[in-house]
Length: 299
Image 1: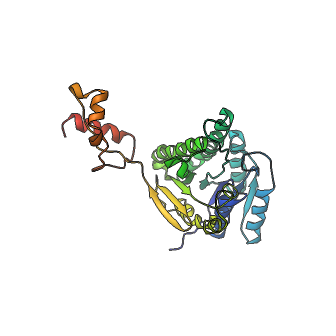
Image 2: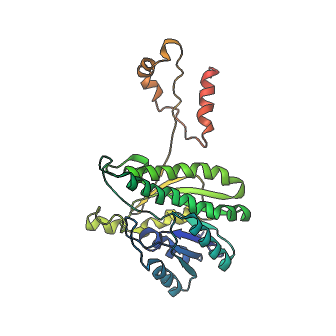
């Protein structure tokens, strides 16, 4: 069955280029009305451009409907105004793809606190601002699809990106609570972990790899994750046409008592504590406590 977005309104942040533009164009091709948000700055967050307007023109040229927005995701009031303008024109907001981002890479030893704060503010707080701005509308509609953008840096680490990694794992964590809070109102929240050749990454890829990792090859996962029949609470990796799933897991662990309830006991039982046989993928934080209680009950 073809996945369509007719009569749906989608907001895509950072949609003036790269992944965001690719998402916006394909959503429009499949029937969505699209709010193209982009501050239009350089990848370190400075400057402005007409990037969002150009994407709107592309969408209109293919017969679609779109509106541009130049608000900064770091300014909650600007995101509220963006949502109000979209609702005034189209009456609803069904989809939010939090894609806006910046890079200020340096080793932690050389990173200024301001650069750490700024990157976390754009990625993590920015996504929270956009999500908060649409949340009540989606609750009232009993429908919403939200996509957070994490990174392999957040999930697994990468030298020189402490600020980016902290923000990106934070987004995966935000997803894990919002999918629980949104469930009763049919709001599904997922995390995408893209690997793509874009303005953000152009000097990190050799030329051939840059082509292989075209943003368009990430789009299928993103659009599935904001579709009507999307899962919720998934972490999906996507790059160069390869799609993966990532999980936060928990081992069964070990109950330590008596003399073993000590740093030495943890050291001695480390192999048992970290034994992955029987590990689970918790659906909520409560499951950690449930495993602990099971140990205490001798089960």
